Image (cartoon, rainbow, N blue to C red; front, side):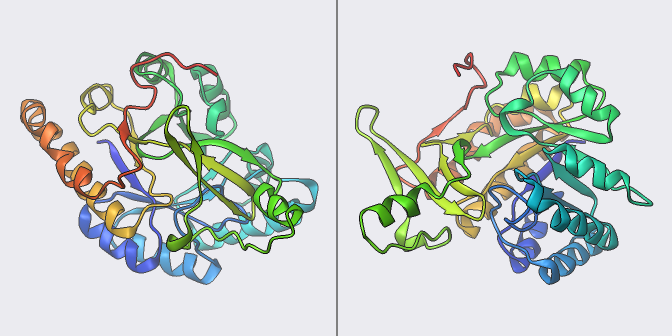
Length: 307
Protein backbone atom coordinates (compact mmCIF):
# COMPACT_ATOMS: atom_id res chain seq x y z
CA UNK A 1 0.00 0.00 0.00
CA UNK A 2 1.47 3.33 -1.05
CA UNK A 3 2.01 5.71 1.87
CA UNK A 4 0.70 9.29 1.71
CA UNK A 5 3.37 11.45 3.32
CA UNK A 6 2.65 15.10 4.23
CA UNK A 7 4.36 18.08 5.83
CA UNK A 8 2.34 19.63 8.68
CA UNK A 9 2.82 23.18 9.95
CA UNK A 10 1.73 22.70 13.58
CA UNK A 11 0.41 20.14 16.08
CA UNK A 12 -3.20 21.17 15.48
CA UNK A 13 -2.53 20.82 11.76
CA UNK A 14 -1.41 17.23 12.30
CA UNK A 15 -4.81 16.47 13.84
CA UNK A 16 -6.54 17.85 10.75
CA UNK A 17 -4.28 15.99 8.33
CA UNK A 18 -4.93 12.72 10.15
CA UNK A 19 -8.63 13.29 9.50
CA UNK A 20 -7.85 14.06 5.85
CA UNK A 21 -6.15 10.68 5.40
CA UNK A 22 -2.40 11.23 5.79
CA UNK A 23 -0.35 8.14 6.65
CA UNK A 24 2.93 9.75 7.73
CA UNK A 25 4.37 13.14 8.64
CA UNK A 26 7.68 14.95 8.17
CA UNK A 27 8.47 17.11 11.20
CA UNK A 28 11.54 18.60 12.86
CA UNK A 29 13.33 21.89 13.41
CA UNK A 30 15.31 23.94 10.93
CA UNK A 31 18.50 23.67 12.98
CA UNK A 32 18.73 20.05 11.78
CA UNK A 33 16.28 19.70 8.86
CA UNK A 34 16.06 21.46 5.52
CA UNK A 35 13.02 23.35 4.24
CA UNK A 36 10.40 22.18 6.71
CA UNK A 37 6.81 23.34 6.32
CA UNK A 38 6.53 23.83 10.09
CA UNK A 39 8.91 24.28 13.02
CA UNK A 40 8.69 21.77 15.87
CA UNK A 41 10.92 22.32 18.90
CA UNK A 42 11.69 19.41 21.23
CA UNK A 43 8.60 19.76 23.40
CA UNK A 44 6.36 20.13 20.35
CA UNK A 45 8.06 17.18 18.67
CA UNK A 46 7.37 14.94 21.67
CA UNK A 47 3.71 16.00 21.61
CA UNK A 48 3.47 15.57 17.84
CA UNK A 49 4.98 12.07 17.88
CA UNK A 50 2.61 10.98 20.65
CA UNK A 51 -0.38 12.31 18.69
CA UNK A 52 0.75 10.63 15.48
CA UNK A 53 1.38 7.30 17.18
CA UNK A 54 -1.94 7.43 19.05
CA UNK A 55 -3.64 7.40 15.63
CA UNK A 56 -1.51 4.60 14.23
CA UNK A 57 0.42 6.90 11.88
CA UNK A 58 4.17 7.41 11.40
CA UNK A 59 6.43 10.29 12.40
CA UNK A 60 9.56 11.00 10.35
CA UNK A 61 12.02 13.62 11.60
CA UNK A 62 14.17 15.54 9.12
CA UNK A 63 17.86 15.58 10.04
CA UNK A 64 19.01 16.26 6.47
CA UNK A 65 20.86 19.51 7.03
CA UNK A 66 24.36 20.34 5.83
CA UNK A 67 26.49 19.82 8.93
CA UNK A 68 29.89 21.28 9.77
CA UNK A 69 32.25 20.21 12.56
CA UNK A 70 30.78 22.73 14.98
CA UNK A 71 27.32 21.14 14.51
CA UNK A 72 28.37 17.64 15.48
CA UNK A 73 27.97 17.79 19.26
CA UNK A 74 24.43 19.19 18.92
CA UNK A 75 23.68 16.65 16.19
CA UNK A 76 24.77 13.73 18.38
CA UNK A 77 22.58 14.98 21.21
CA UNK A 78 19.60 15.42 18.87
CA UNK A 79 19.96 11.87 17.51
CA UNK A 80 19.96 10.54 21.09
CA UNK A 81 16.84 12.61 21.81
CA UNK A 82 15.02 11.17 18.77
CA UNK A 83 15.77 7.68 20.02
CA UNK A 84 14.28 8.54 23.40
CA UNK A 85 11.13 9.78 21.64
CA UNK A 86 11.19 6.73 19.33
CA UNK A 87 10.29 8.41 16.08
CA UNK A 88 9.61 6.02 13.20
CA UNK A 89 12.26 7.21 10.75
CA UNK A 90 15.12 9.71 10.60
CA UNK A 91 15.59 11.49 7.27
CA UNK A 92 19.27 12.09 6.49
CA UNK A 93 21.66 13.24 3.80
CA UNK A 94 24.90 13.43 5.79
CA UNK A 95 26.79 10.21 6.72
CA UNK A 96 27.43 11.75 10.16
CA UNK A 97 23.78 11.01 10.96
CA UNK A 98 24.30 7.35 10.05
CA UNK A 99 27.32 7.11 12.34
CA UNK A 100 25.47 8.62 15.31
CA UNK A 101 22.41 6.45 14.72
CA UNK A 102 24.55 3.31 14.64
CA UNK A 103 25.87 4.18 18.09
CA UNK A 104 22.36 3.82 19.56
CA UNK A 105 21.27 0.64 21.29
CA UNK A 106 18.21 0.20 19.05
CA UNK A 107 18.88 2.24 15.87
CA UNK A 108 15.93 3.98 14.23
CA UNK A 109 15.49 3.18 10.51
CA UNK A 110 16.75 5.81 8.08
CA UNK A 111 15.35 7.50 4.99
CA UNK A 112 18.08 8.75 2.65
CA UNK A 113 17.27 12.18 1.23
CA UNK A 114 20.23 13.95 -0.36
CA UNK A 115 18.11 16.08 -2.72
CA UNK A 116 19.53 16.08 -6.28
CA UNK A 117 22.05 13.32 -5.53
CA UNK A 118 19.54 10.47 -5.32
CA UNK A 119 19.54 9.54 -8.99
CA UNK A 120 20.23 5.79 -9.37
CA UNK A 121 19.57 2.46 -7.72
CA UNK A 122 23.24 1.72 -6.93
CA UNK A 123 23.28 4.78 -4.65
CA UNK A 124 20.00 3.71 -3.09
CA UNK A 125 21.22 0.18 -2.45
CA UNK A 126 24.57 1.41 -1.11
CA UNK A 127 22.83 3.47 1.57
CA UNK A 128 20.48 0.57 2.15
CA UNK A 129 23.51 -1.48 3.18
CA UNK A 130 24.44 1.35 5.56
CA UNK A 131 21.08 1.32 7.33
CA UNK A 132 18.68 3.22 5.11
CA UNK A 133 15.30 1.62 4.51
CA UNK A 134 14.13 4.22 1.99
CA UNK A 135 15.54 6.45 -0.74
CA UNK A 136 13.83 9.78 -1.44
CA UNK A 137 14.39 10.25 -5.16
CA UNK A 138 15.68 13.45 -6.69
CA UNK A 139 12.84 15.61 -7.98
CA UNK A 140 14.64 15.97 -11.33
CA UNK A 141 14.11 12.36 -12.46
CA UNK A 142 11.72 11.42 -15.23
CA UNK A 143 9.20 8.60 -15.06
CA UNK A 144 11.38 6.00 -16.80
CA UNK A 145 14.23 6.69 -14.39
CA UNK A 146 11.91 6.46 -11.38
CA UNK A 147 10.45 3.15 -12.52
CA UNK A 148 13.89 1.74 -13.31
CA UNK A 149 15.17 2.64 -9.86
CA UNK A 150 12.11 1.09 -8.24
CA UNK A 151 12.60 -2.12 -10.21
CA UNK A 152 16.22 -2.54 -9.09
CA UNK A 153 16.23 -0.97 -5.63
CA UNK A 154 16.49 -3.05 -2.46
CA UNK A 155 14.98 -0.23 -0.38
CA UNK A 156 11.67 1.61 -0.31
CA UNK A 157 11.26 4.43 -2.83
CA UNK A 158 9.66 7.80 -2.13
CA UNK A 159 8.60 10.31 -4.80
CA UNK A 160 7.40 13.88 -4.39
CA UNK A 161 4.12 14.32 -6.28
CA UNK A 162 3.01 17.79 -5.21
CA UNK A 163 4.47 21.14 -4.19
CA UNK A 164 7.44 23.33 -4.92
CA UNK A 165 11.05 22.19 -5.17
CA UNK A 166 14.34 23.82 -4.23
CA UNK A 167 16.36 25.20 -7.15
CA UNK A 168 19.20 26.76 -5.16
CA UNK A 169 20.56 26.83 -1.62
CA UNK A 170 23.48 28.74 -0.17
CA UNK A 171 24.69 28.61 3.41
CA UNK A 172 25.28 32.35 3.05
CA UNK A 173 22.61 34.82 4.14
CA UNK A 174 22.52 36.38 0.68
CA UNK A 175 19.40 38.47 1.19
CA UNK A 176 20.44 39.82 4.55
CA UNK A 177 23.92 40.62 3.23
CA UNK A 178 22.42 42.39 0.21
CA UNK A 179 20.23 44.65 2.32
CA UNK A 180 23.07 45.30 4.76
CA UNK A 181 25.28 46.34 1.83
CA UNK A 182 22.58 48.80 0.77
CA UNK A 183 22.42 50.18 4.33
CA UNK A 184 18.81 49.09 4.47
CA UNK A 185 17.23 47.43 7.46
CA UNK A 186 15.00 44.57 6.37
CA UNK A 187 14.37 41.45 8.40
CA UNK A 188 13.92 38.38 6.23
CA UNK A 189 11.10 36.31 7.68
CA UNK A 190 10.18 32.89 6.43
CA UNK A 191 6.62 32.66 7.78
CA UNK A 192 5.37 36.20 7.15
CA UNK A 193 2.64 35.71 4.55
CA UNK A 194 2.29 39.48 4.06
CA UNK A 195 5.90 39.85 2.97
CA UNK A 196 6.49 37.00 0.57
CA UNK A 197 9.67 37.71 -1.34
CA UNK A 198 9.67 36.68 -4.99
CA UNK A 199 12.45 36.95 -7.57
CA UNK A 200 11.10 37.99 -10.96
CA UNK A 201 12.49 36.53 -14.18
CA UNK A 202 11.24 38.91 -16.86
CA UNK A 203 12.41 36.75 -19.77
CA UNK A 204 10.38 33.73 -18.62
CA UNK A 205 7.76 35.70 -16.67
CA UNK A 206 8.44 33.50 -13.63
CA UNK A 207 8.30 34.32 -9.93
CA UNK A 208 10.70 32.39 -7.68
CA UNK A 209 9.99 32.35 -3.91
CA UNK A 210 13.12 33.11 -1.91
CA UNK A 211 13.65 33.04 1.85
CA UNK A 212 16.31 32.77 4.53
CA UNK A 213 16.42 30.63 7.65
CA UNK A 214 19.01 29.01 9.89
CA UNK A 215 20.36 27.02 6.91
CA UNK A 216 20.94 30.00 4.65
CA UNK A 217 19.19 31.19 1.49
CA UNK A 218 16.71 29.10 -0.48
CA UNK A 219 15.32 29.84 -3.94
CA UNK A 220 12.32 27.73 -4.88
CA UNK A 221 10.74 26.67 -8.17
CA UNK A 222 8.22 29.03 -9.85
CA UNK A 223 5.70 26.22 -10.40
CA UNK A 224 4.17 23.57 -8.17
CA UNK A 225 4.45 19.93 -9.16
CA UNK A 226 0.99 18.36 -9.43
CA UNK A 227 0.87 14.68 -10.35
CA UNK A 228 -2.60 13.81 -9.11
CA UNK A 229 -3.62 12.97 -12.69
CA UNK A 230 -0.46 10.92 -13.32
CA UNK A 231 -0.33 8.60 -10.32
CA UNK A 232 -1.26 5.37 -12.10
CA UNK A 233 2.25 4.37 -13.29
CA UNK A 234 3.70 5.18 -9.86
CA UNK A 235 1.02 3.21 -8.01
CA UNK A 236 1.20 0.33 -10.47
CA UNK A 237 4.96 0.12 -9.92
CA UNK A 238 4.45 -0.06 -6.16
CA UNK A 239 6.18 3.20 -5.26
CA UNK A 240 6.28 2.98 -1.48
CA UNK A 241 5.50 6.60 -0.60
CA UNK A 242 4.28 9.72 -2.36
CA UNK A 243 4.92 13.07 -0.73
CA UNK A 244 2.99 16.34 -0.67
CA UNK A 245 5.42 19.15 0.20
CA UNK A 246 3.53 22.05 1.76
CA UNK A 247 6.50 24.40 2.14
CA UNK A 248 5.39 28.06 1.89
CA UNK A 249 1.76 26.99 1.43
CA UNK A 250 -1.10 27.52 3.88
CA UNK A 251 -2.59 24.85 6.13
CA UNK A 252 -5.80 25.04 4.10
CA UNK A 253 -3.89 24.35 0.90
CA UNK A 254 -2.11 21.32 2.41
CA UNK A 255 -5.43 20.05 3.78
CA UNK A 256 -7.10 20.13 0.38
CA UNK A 257 -4.15 18.46 -1.34
CA UNK A 258 -4.03 15.71 1.28
CA UNK A 259 -7.76 15.05 0.94
CA UNK A 260 -7.61 14.85 -2.86
CA UNK A 261 -4.51 12.64 -3.04
CA UNK A 262 -6.02 10.34 -0.39
CA UNK A 263 -9.07 9.96 -2.61
CA UNK A 264 -6.87 9.34 -5.65
CA UNK A 265 -4.90 6.57 -3.95
CA UNK A 266 -8.04 4.93 -2.57
CA UNK A 267 -9.79 5.10 -5.94
CA UNK A 268 -6.86 3.44 -7.67
CA UNK A 269 -6.61 0.72 -5.04
CA UNK A 270 -10.34 -0.03 -5.28
CA UNK A 271 -10.61 0.18 -9.06
CA UNK A 272 -7.91 1.58 -11.38
CA UNK A 273 -10.56 2.32 -14.01
CA UNK A 274 -12.48 4.46 -11.52
CA UNK A 275 -9.34 6.48 -10.87
CA UNK A 276 -8.83 6.83 -14.63
CA UNK A 277 -12.36 8.17 -15.01
CA UNK A 278 -12.24 10.60 -12.10
CA UNK A 279 -8.61 11.69 -11.83
CA UNK A 280 -9.10 14.85 -13.89
CA UNK A 281 -11.72 16.09 -11.44
CA UNK A 282 -9.52 15.48 -8.42
CA UNK A 283 -7.34 18.47 -9.28
CA UNK A 284 -10.28 20.89 -9.42
CA UNK A 285 -10.39 21.58 -5.67
CA UNK A 286 -6.65 22.25 -5.62
CA UNK A 287 -6.79 24.50 -8.69
CA UNK A 288 -9.45 26.61 -7.01
CA UNK A 289 -7.04 27.62 -4.23
CA UNK A 290 -3.80 27.51 -6.22
CA UNK A 291 -1.94 30.88 -6.02
CA UNK A 292 -2.30 32.76 -9.30
CA UNK A 293 1.45 33.24 -9.70
CA UNK A 294 2.21 29.52 -9.24
CA UNK A 295 0.97 27.39 -12.16
CA UNK A 296 1.01 23.60 -12.03
CA UNK A 297 3.44 21.46 -13.97
CA UNK A 298 4.53 17.81 -14.01
CA UNK A 299 8.08 18.51 -12.92
CA UNK A 300 10.50 16.34 -14.88
CA UNK A 301 8.19 13.34 -15.03
CA UNK A 302 7.91 13.41 -18.82
CA UNK A 303 11.10 15.19 -19.86
CA UNK A 304 14.84 14.75 -19.66
CA UNK A 305 16.63 16.60 -16.91
CA UNK A 306 18.93 19.43 -17.98
CA UNK A 307 21.37 20.33 -15.20
